[in-house]
Image (cartoon, each protein chain N blue to C red):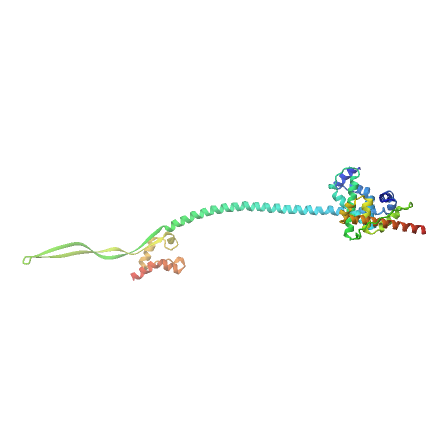
Length: 179
Length: 207
C-alpha cells in the first residue's frame, strides 16, 4: 500500500491501513518521543497517545509530498511530548540567560549509545531545547513560541545543553578508558 | 569544531545509528498497538451510544412536534365549535328573551249584584193653586250580576311554564274556591311571597 492509499484507508478508519501506518512510523516516532522524554515508559505512552491523535485527526491532513505525512506525524509526536512534559511540570528553565561561549571537541570514538545516554541524562529544559534546535531544526524564535519562553532563554538553554552534553560524553569516555 | 558543525555531527549520529540503539526495544511495539487498537475500539463504541442518544432525542422532538401540531388542529376545531356554540347560545338566549317578554294578563273577576235602572218614569203633579210643578220619579231597577275586576296581574309566559297552573280553567276554579294562587314550585318562599304579593293583598281585601 503506497502512502496515498494508506492515508485514504486511515481516513476511512480501516484497521489494516491504521496498522500499516503504525508499523511504518512507530520506530521513528518512538525515537523522537524518547529523545524528548528521556525514558522508555513515557516514550511508549506518548507514542500511543500520539498515534491515537494521528488516527483521529487524519481527516484534516492534506497530502502534499512524500515526506508530508512523516512531518505531520512527527509534529504531533513532538507536541504530545511537550504537552506531557508541561503536564508533569518537568520543564524547568534556568533564569540565567547568559550564553556560554565554548569550543566544541568531540572524540572520534563517540558512540551513539553515549549520545543517547547523555541526552537522556540532561535536565529536561536543556534536553527539550537541544532536541528542538539540533535534531528537529526549529529556530530559536519557534522554540520560544512553542515553549512560551524568550528567545534569549532558548539560546542560553541550548548553549548549556551542549556544554552539559560534552561534559557527560567526556565523563563516559573516561569511564570506558578506565575500564 | 564550530557550533554548526557540532549540531550536524550530533544530528547525523542520531539519525544514522539510532536503529542500533533501539533494536532491543522492538518487542514493545505490539503491546503499544494493542493499546491503540483497544482505545480506538472504545472510541468507536462511544459514537454508537452518541448516535442512539441523538436519534432518541430527535424522535422525542419529532413526537412532541407532531403532538403539538395535532393539538393545534384540535384547538382550532375547538375554537370553531366554541364559536358555533356561542352563536347557538346567542340565538337561544334571544328566543328566551322573547319568551320572557311574552306576558299574560290574569284578571280576577267576581260577580257582583247590582241594580240596574231599567225604566225611569217621571210623573208631573200639577197644583193649580200654586203655580208649582212637582216631579215624582219612579225608577224600576233590575237586579243583575255584573262582573267586577278585583285584581289584575301580568305574568310572563316563562313564569307560567314553571308553575303548576296548567290551564285557565283550573286557575279559575282555584280562584273561586280559595282566592289563593299557589306558585309553589319555586321552592323559595321569598320569591313566592314576591310573586304572590298582589294576590295576597287581594285575598285580604276579599276577606
